[in-house]
Image (cartoon, rainbow, N blue to C red; front, top):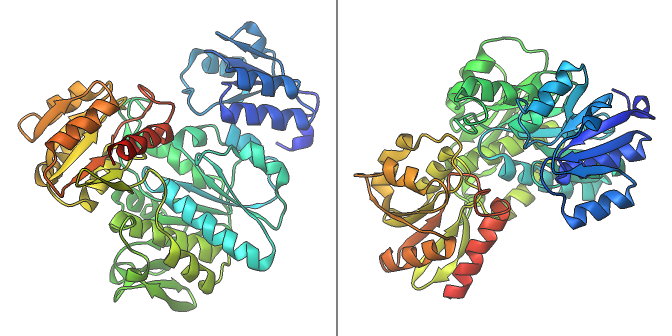
Length: 465
């Protein structure tokens, strides 16, 4: 849809979170008539923001007024099966995500990143690389989307010279129909949010694959060729209408087939296109304490592929990659206290992210895990837990599920709060050992979000010091 087509049209926004408020502001500036409807309570700060925007709102449920609209923008946390969303569709009202809405206004080039794990690290790396290049060449790079800043809140400031680096969840992609990134990145697909997708990884993957559904000639799709589900999906059809770049840990595997790739050869990152092959830098110049492991190497390779597709110089990529130390709440070193190393991995909201963290921490650790379960299958990590973990401290709504899942595998203690969990971990860790906080669950049972959860953990560690 063109932005000018929204002028004078009524639009309902379901959900008064950050993305909903940003969408309301964007619609108001476009001359539409937005109305925000929140099933729960609207915070005083949000209410004041909406009043300043002159946007009417309601809370405590959805009234009939929400259906007096030509368009509905739905917040990502609200499932497509929610009664209000089903009725919107039955009435013929277009239902889109905030990402889709903002894309109608976006003049900038878009790099979209999705997948189960690695989205935030990859998006952060790409943004920093593009930002550094922009400082040299006179354009700006914006970091928006699932990373925490709504696309709609920044899109009006963008120009055609700029780059929008957009982290995308499956929830956000569900409501995308015309959204077309110039460069799309798929990091991996493993089971996550199975409670939302009825236990079907195929349904979950279908939502992720919407990132490339509108891509055409001139666009680029980057995917992890070592991921079985992605490999099966992209190998099923050749050729695709867009350029495809594969990433993987072993160049000899990717070189067996034609096409562009970014990989590792002789300890160096190599970038191959149809007409060139370039060694960028050594892997050991990038990997360091706090940023290590194969999963982070995949993030680096995807970032290099995306930056190369965007025309970023090798010099800029080398400079940023050499100085990168990871992102907050993802295997972040939180300090040494009571003779123990404490690691904050609050960003790990699924079982595969926990597996990656376990692979990166020395054996004999104490693991703090738990939160709101998302239909997790903990049995798939039983072997690595047995190998690496001395004791689990389980917290949150899922603590009994975790205790049951690892009965007979490792000692499991249950805590009523994060503070109690930290104390139990301190008392049960071996001297000189590590404590890993990697929940494998969402945070919404006890915390505002995973950032709040991680910061509370780090504060507790500081108090131990």
